[in-house]
Amino acid sequence: MRPETHSLQRLARRFSARLKSARLKSETLMGAMLMSAMLMSAMLAGLALVIPPAAADAFDLDALQRELTQAPSVTGRFEQQRELADLDATMTSRGHFRFERGERVVWQLEQPVEERITLTPEAIVNASGDRAPPGGEQVARLFLELLEGDWASLESRFAIALDGSAEAWQVTLTPKAEALARRIREIHLSGGESVDTLEMHAPNGDRLRVRLFDQTPIPAP
Image: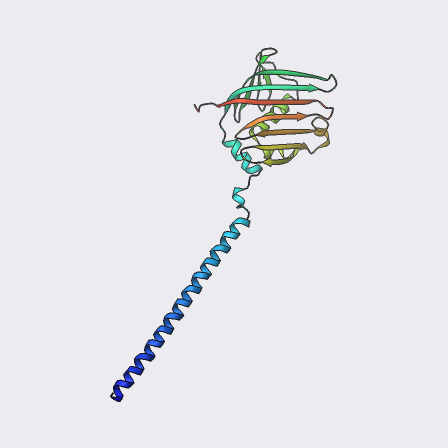
């Protein structure tokens, strides 16, 4: 065998060995990269389980107010129970109502008597046009603010606590001022897309509970 041929064979073997070594290193590197990617994916999946939801998904009073503000005006039926602690008696009235958001609530009593009462931010007026005594406008304004979830107006007079979710929430309002606390111990609201129940407790044990049901949106004009 010629010396040149022998040299060429040795060069070929060396080149083949280096090529195998380079391929092995490349495969090892690719395997390491793949393993790193798998570990990173597993870590991210684990983090997804422990990272709390984004703040945008949190349900708070602002979110509830937006939900109630977007709800349409409605008509429906109501049942009102007034418990008088001193007399150990409960007075129940029923009828239907019309809630025109931002304007008024029309309360049409059917039992035990027939009477229509309209509540606006300015007054409480019956079907004959007679107004409630002074202070009635404050009651009417409070009732409208509660139905509309106007926490910005209510929080100046009440400490407000929210519990639950957008589908089933409960709000408790506690008076801040002593003068108001002598008349109202606390107010409870509950609902979903709209207010379904309202309870008002007085310091002397009296309780007013209003349940709103069969609510139907009023078609836009």
